Length: 204
Length: 204
DNA sequence: GAGAGCATGTAAAGTGTTACATGATTCT
DNA sequence: AGAATCATGTAACACTTTACATGCTCTC
Image (cartoon, rainbow over all chains, first blue to last red; front, side, top):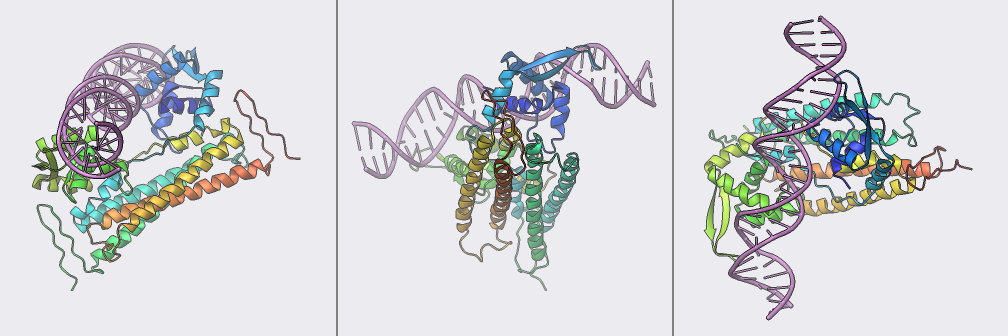
């Protein structure tokens, strides 16, 4: 019925009613959340979903303006969401600019390659910190049982943790390889096609 | 200088000169490749890069038409590519429709949730098969040493393998949780907001 | 009263997908 | 002769980001 963004909005609103602004904030730092959008995309989509009968809103006078709208699912929306959730999903083919860049690192010098991967490694560590913080918000351990509505939200955080840990391990492996090479352990030679052509001398 | 797609094209062409058609085929089943694009995006971008002086082409009369163009990097392109490759990279925030759907699975019945995750699990296994096939193409083991230009291409395949394995493990964990619940081990109750409201009876 | 944050919208530009369109060669 | 594949392009549409635009409220 709608675009993926539409279902993403239904997804957040299925938990608590929110304003467009609150959704925007929520999607800015999506620790454990799986979609992003700017408010310029969110507001029109909320209007579309309302017109399609999947959402309603109640106006209220809060701070900001007297015309704040707090959206929540209609019955139709509460049917459409789970129907979409387990419908056949086309294989995803995520793009990764990071891996695209790694493929071209052989054209740089070993120093530059190592610096780049090191920076990415640090990013992994930062992300893991964020995930741990996010997990702490599911405070009462007994609520984090599978049959709680929030179980699946928690499960997506687990997913992030698992994947990020795996990526970190990969980056450590890659750095090991690069450092070993830099120490000349394989005696290889990396020719940079850069203006200052850099040819590594064989180890002494 | 260019969009990410532009650098992706420079990246493939930095290995061997190719025609637009060949790049299109290459990007269709990107096992170990990290970007996709349709030919309708590729042809204009190749023209743009050529006009920008990063690519050249030589015409040749092969099958298909007498005006086939085989593109390769210019010196400027061979400088621009590594400069982009290790330049600061904004944090990536990949979207995952699959995880978005998982977050809404609590609105379905346990049966539907399990079937969905099971299907995704199978997809993981298929992908792992593809990765193993892709890795086999790097046949001579001694070529797969870090200082070979193809080392980084191989490393990206390793990345896919690592991540896919981690995702598979997560899905197995999730299925365990769901099955345990279905057997009533936690005695929980999952209320579907679906037309046929499904309330699980507590275990006997 | 000035600035930060709350709150909502529209416009324009860029990126990506699907569909339209054409023509040659190779295989059956 | 017809279908599949090679090969190249354009057009229309959908999605996303960035920028423009406005106005209120709360805090310092």
